[in-house]
Image 1 (cartoon, rainbow, N blue to C red):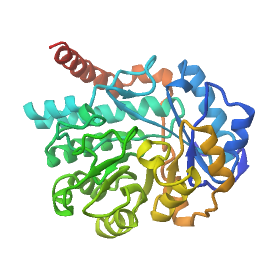
Image 2 (tube, rainbow, N blue to C red):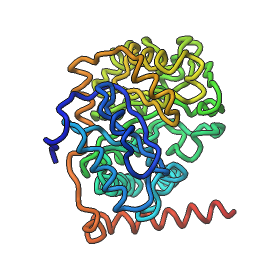
Image 3 (cartoon, one colour):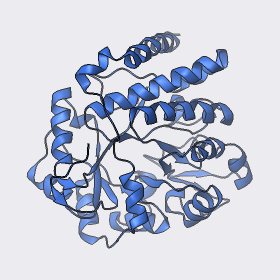
Amino acid sequence: MNNTTGEPMSLGSVMIDIQGTVLQPDEKQRLLDPKVAGVILFTRNFESIEQLQSLTASIHALRHPRLLIAVDHEGGRVQRFREGFTRIPPMRTLGQLHAKDAKHSFAVAEKIGWLLASELLSVGVDFSFAPVVDLDYGGSKVIGDRAFAMNPVTVGQLAFHLMTGMRKAGMASVAKHFPGHGFIEADTHTEIGVDERPFAEIQQKDMQPFLNLIENSVDAVMPAHVIYSKVDSQPAGFSVHWLQTVLRAQCHFEGAIISDDMSMQAAAEFGSPAERVFKALQAGCDLVLVCNDPQATDEVLSKLHWHAGPLSHARLIRLHAHDKIPYAKLPYHPLWQAAVTEINVLNQLNDQQELI
């Protein structure tokens, strides 16, 4: 799967988006900027399997090593591609299954991880920003049923099995949103979130699933755009303390740190787009997302002065897809068939609950 065509150029440190279903000439020029490391896709970039395969192939052909292609594809309400893809249930359904039959829930989580990854890999996507390992405290506007459960041990176990399935398919995984976004009610897409709990409580509860995945070599971690006011005045994604002292030194995490979107309101308070990206990189991020704001993207690419070291580049290279089954062959694969059977049962249960 190694692409040896295209411009020879190291991966940069910024992941950007594109507007439509086909690469435009100005977008190709942006993607050839040395600061760019990859593309995040959204629903607007998808109209059919064939179109998506053509789009990802055109992005991958631009450079060598090829640009990373990622998507938010967790299941439930966060699934960017629908037509031609299996409808993945929200992760809370796995937590509910765990309460009835833990062993079975682990097997189902692994199957879902494998299917989620295999379908994306078959259309040229390198990785998904999953799993969410925030705890379901019951009050979060933005997390909600994206979380597996409230119990940290349950979340860690289910996330591990989902990650295992993704890894078997050939896909890296991204644990989010470190050190835990589930406690606060605020939606950081539209407002600043502040978690006032002491570090000890966050460490004993919210950080435990991350620690479990880190012990099992999770490929990447995404920090939250949340201020943990008793720990640091900066949101975790801009915080040297959270990223260097806690995540790297104390948690012994050696994979990629990927920022959440710098266009979110919780990040917008911290300077111009280029200043925000620089602060995140300086704090310890290896890859920074700038989405849904072409002007901000152009400003970042023209004004950002940053040169990532070889270690950071190596962390990003490991996020490339490692394997794939052709899309047309997936329905005949026994693992795909077994996963779809389990998923259909979970979707039926979830649909019934939503009707109540």
